Length: 197
Image 1 (cartoon, one colour):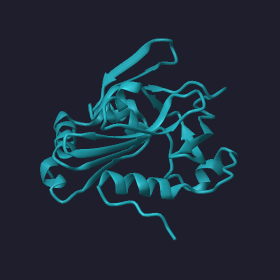
Image 2 (cartoon, rainbow, N blue to C red; image 1 turned 135 degrees about the vertical axis):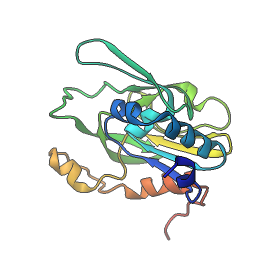
Image 3 (cartoon, rainbow, N blue to C red; image 1 turned 60 degrees about the vertical axis):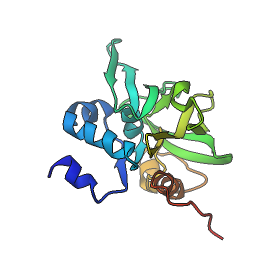
């Protein structure tokens, strides 16, 4: 099915986590252009982890051999997304941590697995807003606008089920964070976010 036909019935493109390099390389130029066009004309984009990497103009990180990997992203956000390397002793075999943050001012513990941070120019101008930061102050989660559309990305996984944390022996004291993923999707689709009574 041609990408533009697929988008005709959609409100939000959700780009999941995974391997950002593989996703960036395997997405066709036509699909990348269609996603940008979809958001520019009023659609939403939600990116979790690798989906956050892909939203930026450039995604980058240091490879295991010390070389620097850099590639163009979708360009829905200004600036770069870079691998967040401040957690201790992260390896391919032990890649996950619980990140503690203030998400819109509320303390949350969120599942993180080799995620990015976003450079400050991603929220330059009146259209951008930081939603959450890492302890070191780097941007973890943000929302912004692209053309007539909305973009909401995060380095963490609020959509993660409890067994993701349990699988690595991690304790998440405030439990599932699915409500934050719903918040992201609703905001990106321009549906008002209401708090439960």
